[in-house]
Length: 115
Image (cartoon, rainbow, N blue to C red; front, side, top):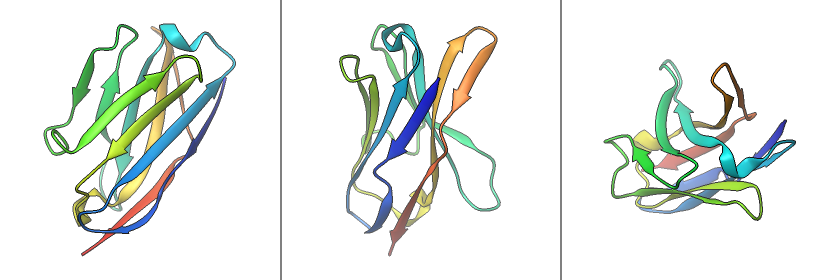
């Protein structure tokens, strides 16, 4: 399984970014996917998750601002981030649950939001 993330960068507060995570090597449509983030000195936290039937969950801190989605035809999961805040600054990671005992993480992409 390979995962390639992209879309990170630097924006001013109030701006938007869209992260992408392309997955190869498995039947993508049946897997649950998630986006996590880790800020300096903090633990990695779940930002948003989407399961195979399309149901979505979000951290309270991003509800109403971030949207997770997936395109099974492109084996890609997205994270649309709007109204970005400086506290959203972190390395963002894509995660795929391969089965009950196994998962895989992307390499991470840096998001920096300046005030």
